[in-house]
Length: 363
Ligand code: CIZ
Image (spheres, rainbow, N blue to C red):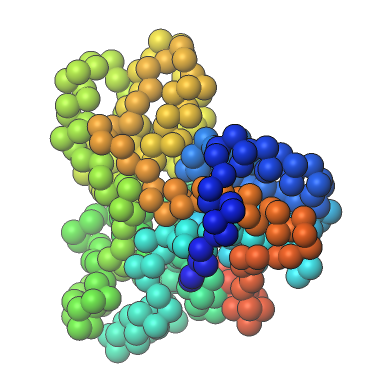
């Protein structure tokens, strides 16, 4: 991915000038355009979003709007790919900054996953392994999963998808996030030591042996989210010492010990709902991205809400969507030009759609 520098004429604009020009472009584009804003986007971006949500909700919303010609996805690359896969051939999905990737999604590429499949195949029958990819993955990985009888999952529906996979095959390969895979399998009663191992794509044969592959049911990919890796059991203990009534809720991309130390865990949508529905006067320590937590705190002034990480932890790649980039892609559309289109080739999209559709039928 490469993002060409923005014109100086745009980068020099003040926030007020930028907002005024976005407003004009928005008016010009009318119903042709829908702006999608992920929960982790900053306020200066989310205020322009026609819809807010997690990646799947936003992609599904896009698919429910056949009248729209363009979707600007204020999120990261894999999310715009999912939106492109689920919308029609004629609809155009745009990512304002091509450098807004996802470091976790980058931790598993198709060549590494195909190598892994070969390593597993030397030890066991891969037709009995069900591959599951978290939506935070490239379309090529979703296509691999679709071709090999597996499904995608999100952090909201991972439990149902993993349960389905365990009933369907003898083993499951979960990528790219080892933590979501481990937390989900543990919640379904599997043991992290007895039943699982981590495949490391940077080691010969994934750092595993045929005996280990044969013995264990769950193969976890060595990938993680850099934002959620910042949350620790120590932060939780310190928070409990300071606020004895606090309730701790964390994202399942956090490690197992952090999830175990929390009172509850769940996807962005679950965290939002749990905290929003909680009674006034309650106190919440949250383990997820700071923009979402800060917005939740402002929307619920009757509760005490804060991020467990005392040092601000924005998702650095989500943060690359800045108002200047949004303006740039919108003004291009007004001139009749499409910049930064995310287009998944149909040869990949058709198998990736299988993985997404299978997930939707399971949940
Ligand atoms: O699916 C998403 O949008 C992500 C990245 C996490 C979540 O929990 O919603």
